[in-house]
Image (cartoon, rainbow over the protein chains, first blue to last red):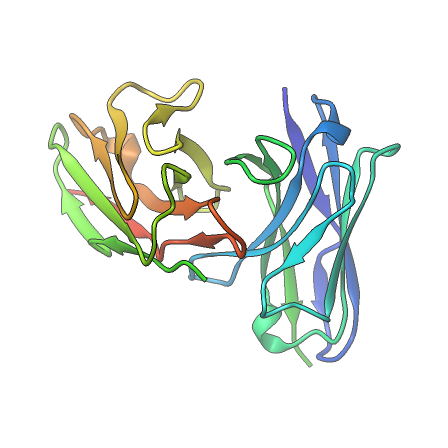
Length: 120
Length: 107
């Protein structure tokens, strides 16, 4: 069965950096686009970024553009997001999620999320 | 950016009632509109993809319809376990966007 397990969350000071990872299993990772979606405490879902199945293209929400970088290692079945210049408003649960296709389909499976808290 | 607006924001319903949640897009998304259920302290789960296709394992009381800019999620004969927040999501264009959510409370 499809499993997505995020890690790397924690408390970080404003302006600092953090890298999240998502370990995938139960499917052919290299065949699927992958997303990061976040949810601030008590708020709705906010799409963050997508990376194509082969890593050839990446797109970001305006709110994180130029600060976050999504990447993947298909040999390790792992998705990453490097988060720099973190702000208080980046505080959220970060979900790794699978695109049903290579990049532009429904998001069909989600991880359980990892909490990032940006606070001094 | 395509804005998705759901209604209502909140609804209190009784078991066995029929519930309709709507999602309106600021521009056409064709049928690239999907519905998710999120229970407290859980990750979202896909219910309906491409406006009307049921995802694997989803109970038949959940159904979706619509195209273009207007979509509905219907829950027939609501059960207590359906207490959750429901989100619509479009994959028609980037950036991807979600509706603000509809919280269902079971009386």
